Image (tube, rainbow, N blue to C red):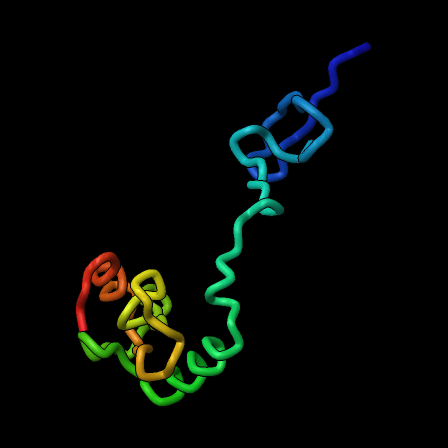
Length: 111
């Protein structure tokens, strides 16, 4: 049987499919399989979603640096006491931080 070649939809290069899955993309551009991704159920809580919505309406800027956020530095909801250390989704345990401050804060105890 003749070997078949395909054109990658991203880079437009010819490639030979290894198997029948994702035969429209070369190895470099094949999509990641997200079917088996583990979802963190702690953040799928209705109380958290409700309180996150409330606090985003109340606090329009980062609590540390007072920036209003942008497309490159979005505002996110942060747990003051992390869930892994016994924190809760209560509104008193939530605050708004920009992504830069949130990344600085991760793994540390800051109030």
